[in-house]
Length: 233
Image 1: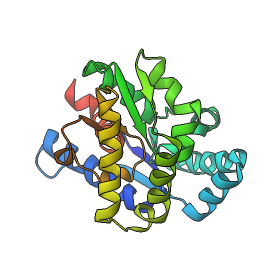
Image 2 (image 1 turned 135 degrees about the horizontal axis):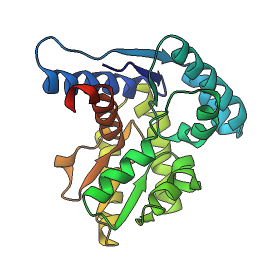
Image 3 (image 1 turned 90 degrees about the vertical axis):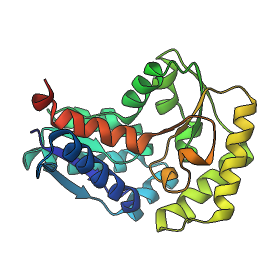
């Protein structure tokens, strides 16, 4: 079994989901008492968020690169960054290590193609929705990407940072998200990318008829399968 190097804590609320999903998939696939071989480096999210809000992506890249190097030195076979937004610096992190980094946007794009999705809406932090580092990967796979309006993006971003990242899951925010999803559905999207690892704490597939693509689940499942690929082949 390959050892997964997890860079978590962004926020730790969703990092829990990664650990649960990875271990559940391995248990289901291998049976018995099997569980994941993984190493978790959990960063201080306050420090990362300050880098985001100030636009200091170089500093955040160094913090996460240092974490990746430590995971590599501790025996990780590949790296998983347990967040969507910080994949903005994924290439910079990959440059510092010699083990693979499993990019969340790449694996999400593969799932979208498998489901023959042609037009998708992207929900996430304002950085993920408004910048190109994430959208371009989806677009380069032949899929059209829509984002919510500016007002809706503010609602989504504030809910992520002020509520979900600190463990608050409110019914009013859920209703607001579902209203945004309904509006996007009216624009003809084939699915919705839950492009922040916390959104899945708020919105589930049974809340809407529009197909949801929860990147936390997609990423964690792929990490688990990659770690046990030698068993499955």
